[in-house]
Image 1: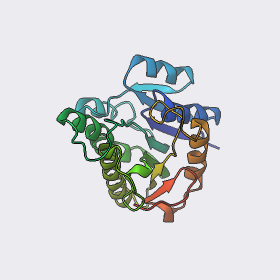
Image 2: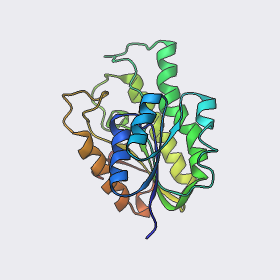
Image 3: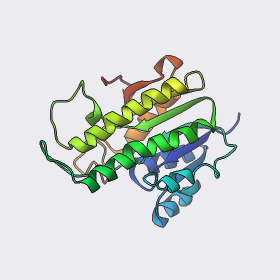
Image 4: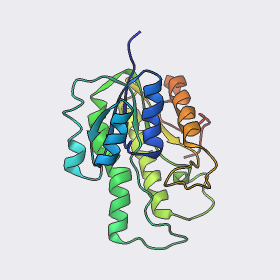
Length: 224
């Protein structure tokens, strides 16, 4: 049986690094990205191939193409993301805040998906890390509305990717849960190891009919 090849974008810590750890423990060949030396060192310490990548930069995102040229990844997870201002209500973000969040969470994925599409193995699983906060159907509060807007936009990007890649890959947007990471905080209700193990199981169990869906970490469907 061939070794499964996995690409994790945004793996310096938290959910991304846990994906690297778990896939490496499962015997997979993992390639993962980070922006800074500290993140790259953590990736290498787990036995994965580390690539420097800044998804918020056009030149940085373009740098992914040549190191993965000729690869055939079975699993790709686009995890890179930032929260931005911890707003409540209709507090207008600054231009810099808007650009930082939208460039990382949305434009980054739009830059990377065309490159990733060229290095997918037949029947690959492709996931973007979204959030229940991006759901309009489930929305009841307004905190963090810039982050919410970015994840709603990311969901749209994933849906388009799923249409383009239908028959080649199964694409989903994940809500990872409220996870105990730097972003989620210590009060979050889900350990990062549990969130990632759930998402790995969900990815492995995906069927072609699941292409283009928005799902919870445990595979339950979510409203857009």
